[in-house]
Image (cartoon, rainbow, N blue to C red; front, side, top):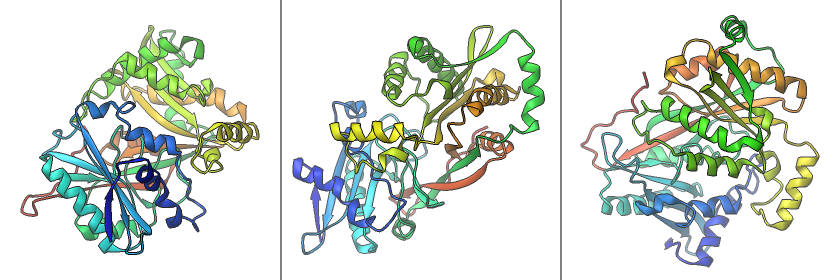
Length: 386
């Protein structure tokens, strides 16, 4: 076997092509957009390169056939937020061969060790947790946009190498057409009777205002998380502008108390229902195909991107009020049938309970693994949130 560092246009293209034969007979696989993968490793587009670093490899067999790939990276913003200085591995793909997997993992471990890392988490993203994070271990159905999908045998490849479960990420499905459960209604109706509260969906004409509101809520609501770093309004504006081509104003909601932003529920149409027809390419022809399939109405699912309530108003029914206010608008549209709530960590029992109270079901489970380089050092799972 030959391990090759991705360093030119040819190897970059091969990195994108590694998964194709692995999934050729898997109807659930949706080939990610090439542009999305390339952007992660583009220093001009990924600002983490300013302080961090990343490397990619492809693996070939003795006949020159592509049989695997992996990326390793150091994110200086998160590397020192747990008990070990930790790097990451991700974008792993491999044939069902432990020797091949070990070669990829060994290369990652050596490179990260040279960078001063004591452990590696994987499979994760060189970027936000909302994308390309975790190994799928249950519910092998088509993935939502920028969520990982993998063969079940990857579990064995990771665990046989010595990766241990750091935390699980749950994906819940909600039937949009069903009535919101009574457990949310009493508090929500009391909130609706007060003129101090209001709930509204986004208006694209006022995107800067909603970006500022989202930034304020996010920075208040996520401040207790160990890896937290405040976001800026400019960062949020840039993210919302990226959403514009697929944004549906009526499925992004905000809650206010006396004009103070206190809650948001950001949902997007599940565009993987269209991307599956594009073969990874969003060129001019891909854009035409995207517009065609969107016109045909193949996107009948939403996926939850972010949900948050500022600490002062948590446990007071605001979560249910936002959901009910959104349901009153979304349900009559008859456009969406399901909502998939992604990325709810098993270290966040409050959020899990809220989602379970909605009458949801767990449809998928992802797992973030950790490999500690020194086997003599103790392992512990991710700490629980209060």
